[in-house]
Amino acid sequence: MRHISANTNACILLDKPPGITSFRALKQIKDRMGTSKVGHAGTLDSFAQGLLVICTGKYTRLAGMFMALPKEYLATFVFGTTTDTLDPVGQTTGSGRIPEEKEIREVIGSFTGEISQRPPEYSSVHINGKRAWKYAREGQAVIPQARPVVISGLVMESYNPPEAVFRVSCSKGTYIRSLARDIAQALGTVAFVKELHRTKIGRFSVQDAVAPDAFDPAKHCMAADVIFQSIPGVNLVKACDELCRLCVYGKDISRSGYAQAFVEGLNAVLDEKNRLVALVQKTENGFSYKMVTGEA
Image 1 (cartoon, rainbow, N blue to C red):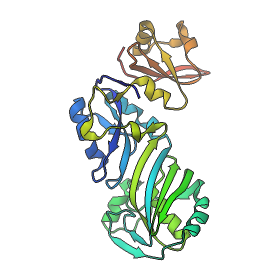
Image 2: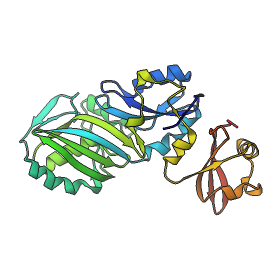
Image 3: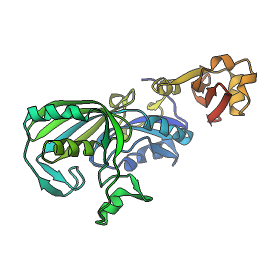
Image 4: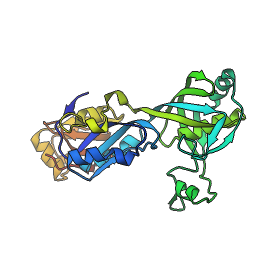
């Protein structure tokens, strides 16, 4: 994967180790990029590891695009035991039988496609303006509402009772801890997630990510064309200086000689140094600016 020398606007693939929060994983990025304007496109629980897409500077406005992408995980479920948090950090709250491998393989088919999933009580979903995990820690019985998610792939790669390793491909908003809970309930037992490794976000892979302590701004900031070639539905427009100036100042592109370079939908305008200049939406009604970085 190609990279560019860093300014304060960048996207970085980070390989978060287990045992730290996603917020703490950003510290090295903030220090070495020289900016406090740093965010990630989708958190990982502290026990989990794997891919985080980090956005800095003005590129933090791209986070929503990354968050909407599908995810892939490798997860280890432990059947026959559960915890209040549905992960290894919580307190043991129940036990049950350990299912046979055949039973598990028969039931997981009912958890693919669009399903209704209730987030865990210990989660970051908002309930009446407050995080669900705060209610749980206070001992208040508040149950998050179920919502639709899509499980596009669910494969049990190995089973060494009571532990099963699953590869899960899923949509934004899916909780793997809830998936473990619900599969176990369908089998008449309980389970929790022992290990969780996020391996992909859209076309971005953890194999291309860097550990927080190894991050080097000169080596690990993704080139703009790499970013947008990996996000479906975005057209790249390589712009000359004149078009860049039009975009920076928010001028009407439709009256320029460059309109034909744009397609219906979202267009990423890149300058000759391969930096993002603007995101421009083209519709039948004309052009609108969704983001201008001012880097021309």
